[in-house]
Amino acid sequence: MAQPFDPAGAARWLAEAFETGNPLAALPEEIAPRDLGAAEEVAAATLAVLELVPCGIRLLRRGGTTLSAPMVEGRLIGAGRPVATAALRHAEVTAAAIGVLAEPLDPDGDTPPVFARLHPALDIAATRFTAPPEDSVTLTADLARLGLVVAGKAKAMAPATLRVALGAKGVRVRGAELDLAAAFAEAAVAARRWGGLPAGALLVVAGLTPPRPPEGVLRASLGALGSVEASFA
Image (tube, rainbow, N blue to C red):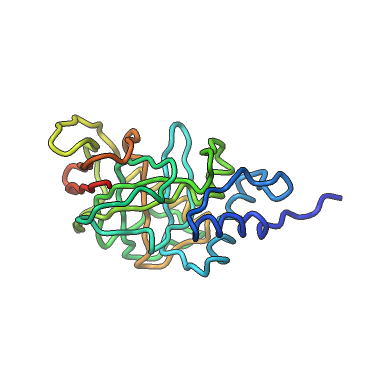
């Protein structure tokens, strides 16, 4: 009879890599999660080992898939200071948006999230692994490639259809139309699957543009929501 999956082994490996920045080889087969549910258990257990309390849920659009995992307050930074990339392995930058919940997200509910405010953001995805994994299970266990999230100025507005672009500062990029309300609705479904969120928690939607390497000064523009930029060193 197969033994129930124990996320503790993989969580200890990932927590050490998360804390020290040391690269992590592929997880041994005997402790690696085999499905998405097990991967989410590993992600949650990793934060428990690190004694970190999630401040929300982050949804990452990557290629044709979406990944979700807890957001950690210590990985959220304000715009205006250089971002050191040495500790961010295989980093990729995309435009993102942050919603601060005005009302709780009940795990059994199905209404759209209600926000107190929104922030334009830059998402810097990274990995704890020496060789970046590509399968959704490992990526989810790796906190959905959580690196850093750079938050711009808040605005009190409802999610709307925006033109979202990401490019080097001073270079005009046309971008593409994005239904931000639909993106946040997808994030809300993920957050409810993770157990719901209280008022004041964050919903982060990342991967809103094709990824770019963290080089020079990058600027994300999200229409009426505003823009945010970060310099990379």
